[in-house]
Length: 254
Image 1 (cartoon, rainbow, N blue to C red):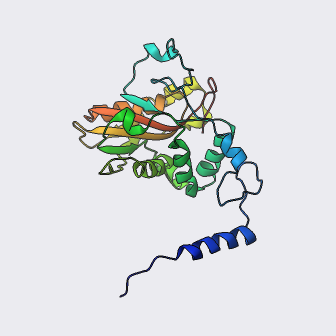
Image 2: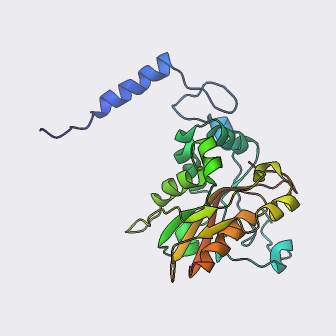
Image 3: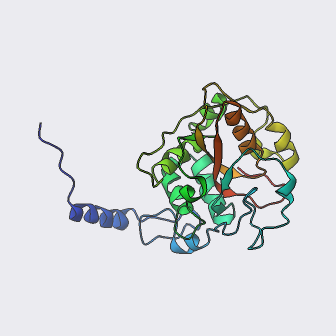
């Protein structure tokens, strides 16, 4: 059998032009026509807010002066935390389409937005090498209802962007306990109570360095409980990475 030959570049370019002529792309947020095959127009892309000066512990935007954050006295099970984007208008709508409308093809777009050059320091610069990339777990009933675990999709896309010789494998090690109420419907106080003892890990992670991945961080309760479960399983280091940080006091995320 002869090997499959790559499609010539001029044919790919021609196909894109035909798609633009007969199926013109529209921005998912403002619904205006895009000049290229992208989910966001240039105007909405410029409105994606970067988390340029986050608190290193809670990731809230704290300006250039990072002293005096309320989280300073709180215990954390994370060795570091990276949350490159802010969960504001444009990104909120894009994540809604991705998460609740089944637009899984937006996963790489979201990771690209988070890993662009203008965002804070690279993941490797904050964490050093990691052995495993672990998505935050999702109860099987919730996953069956949605059709996918969005944190697992992010972990797969993020792992491929890490600038290391051997890409760390993605493993779904966190088993989520059943919850009567979804986190996105709760206030900050109720989220903290609802997230207690949420995860368990069956595998021995002695001396492992973990990159823990989730989509939107609101109170930090989910990340902290997941990090605690990984440490209980023996993990030596747990570094957190979330796509976006909610900045509404006491508000619900997604």
